[in-house]
Structure formats: C-alpha cells, structure tokens
Length: 174
Image (cartoon, rainbow, N blue to C red; front, side, top):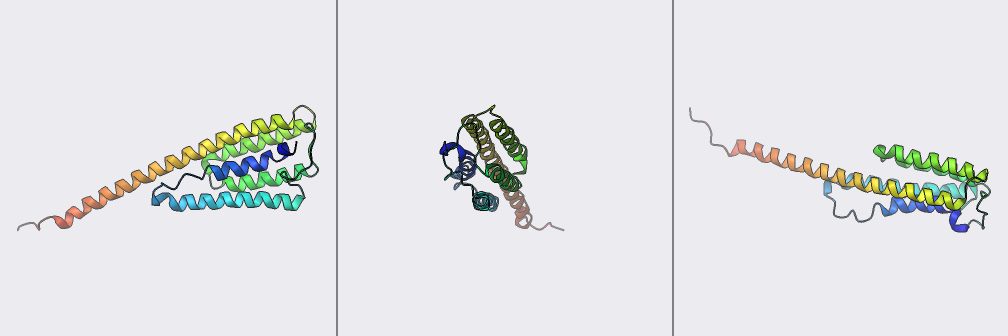
C-alpha cells in the first residue's frame, strides 16, 4: 500500500530524471537547451518535495492506505504536484497536452478512488503508462532537436565556406 501512495511522485520524478540520462553525446549547440531542461527537471523534483513539506504528506513515508481510500492531505499534495508539473511543462511546450492529460487522468482516477470505483493500483498502472509515453515523447523531441541543430550547424558551415570563397577569389582584371 505504501508503494501505491508514492506512485505519482516517484513516477514523475523518475520519468524526468531518467529521460535526461544518456544525452552526453549531444552537440554543443543543444547543450544550453539541455542544461535548461535538466534544471527544470531538478526544479520539478524540488517542487514536489516542497509539496510534501507543505502538506505533511509524503508518499514515500505514508502509512499503509487501503486500496479504495486516499491518505490524509493527499488531495492537497496532488494539487500542489499538478502545479509543479504544469510549471515544468513550460520547458516542454510541445508536450503540454501530454502533461495536462496526465494531470486530468490523475484527477479523474483520484476521484474514482474516493467513490470506490477504482483502486490505487489501477491508478498507478495507468499513471505509469502515461508517464512512459511522456518519457518517450521527451526523448523523441530531444533527438529531433539535436538533428535539427546539427542540420542548422551544417548549413551555417556551408554558408561560411561559401562566403570564404569571396576572399579567395582573384581580383577582377580591368
């Protein structure tokens, strides 16, 4: 049960941290964007930790909660977590819809748990699926941005090489 209550925090944090690993081979042109994204991921983890401090609910330390119930202050914590994810999504505008889907489905599933129509395990399984989709989309976006930056760099190199031809040319004879 304890594992179920921490699914949202751990899944979000893991998704954002794991998706930024293995990117060391990127070109230097993408380094500032990646650095900004890595900072945003760190901020997300920090913001989620602050939610735990503010509401006295820590999914990692929560007592065993029945499958069809929420922990005390869990709703407030989750709302704070939604704000943190929305703030993070500003660094990934192309994926904002996916983050909103994650949040909206979590809200619906949390309401369903309260009404007894869904279990914490069912919510965790669905959140894991959504988070994996977001992670995959983030990785694809990073790869696409890298390819785009590489193409831009090549175009700049070609343009500069072409311009160098002006000073390598012999002066016209008059």
